Amino acid sequence: MRRSPSGLILGYHGCDHRVAEKLLKGQPFQLSKNEYDWLGAGAYFWENDPVRAYQWSVDAIERRKSRAKPGVVGAVIVNQQAIGTPYRHPKGTPLTVGFSDSHGSP
Figure 1: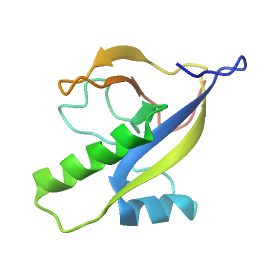
Figure 2 (figure 1 turned 90 degrees about the vertical axis):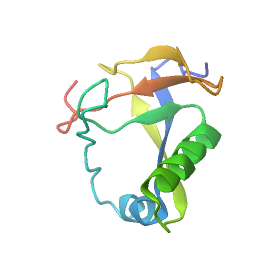
Figure 3 (figure 1 turned 180 degrees about the vertical axis):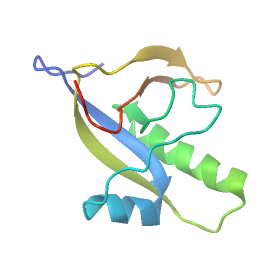
């Protein structure tokens, strides 16, 4: 786990490439509000794992039967009140899922 002493975390968000382009232009995240979002509404990131974020976006696009291209956006996250839980994905890839509320409150 690569964390800096300041609590900064490198997070990667898997998404449609068009969403990635909008985020890079400064558009805010649209929070996920699905019933299966086990940490609640938020923007989810893969900690220190851009490859897993990319694979998640590929899988999500396939589930939707979309023609979109996968994308990944990286972020430096200040760990003040993030919820992180070590979890082993069914494919065997270790990961930590993070949550950020819509106001960015600590």
